[in-house]
Length: 82
Image (cartoon, rainbow, N blue to C red):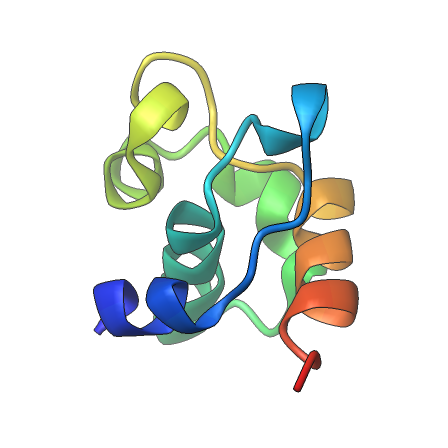
């Protein structure tokens, strides 16, 4: 599912703005909702959760998943794009 979604998301970011790949941000968004969290405001708590870090993958496995501000940008600026 996330492979299909990430293929549909065009990533125009560059430099330090690409810490988390869109497929990881998408997985964090979806699985956070499935875990019962309502929106990206809970991302700071979820960013430290070991299971969520594995779901996001990449850098998050060893550090932390995306923060509330990073998830907010993704969910408000990227997901609504046509």
